Length: 117
Image (cartoon, rainbow, N blue to C red; front, side):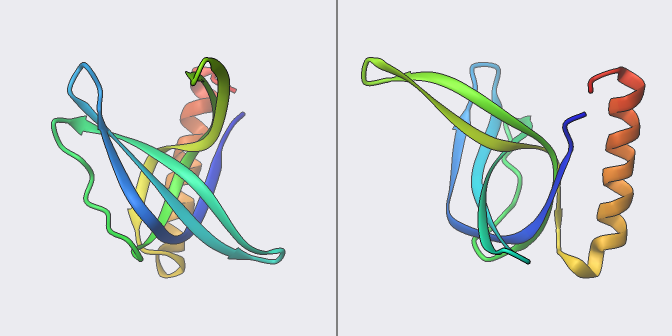
């Protein structure tokens, strides 16, 4: 099973990419503060056709999804990037933790039922 939940603030630039089918991918970093210190997690969110999700720098978010590693060609060599592919992005953090936990549980159950572990 591949499920991750990250709560933190969006840092740096948000990058928007439009796929050939019109869907928008929004890439952004989320900075968390954990027991081992700050950690920055790269995230990607596939939005609805023709419309990017409304996120801003410094917004506190809860990101639920799965970790993925993508390979691509750059400058004649193959390189990779690991990020959190968001299935849900909830504006807000700890005050909305009950909602985030419910969404994460829902995601876990659907993954288990679909056999995508």
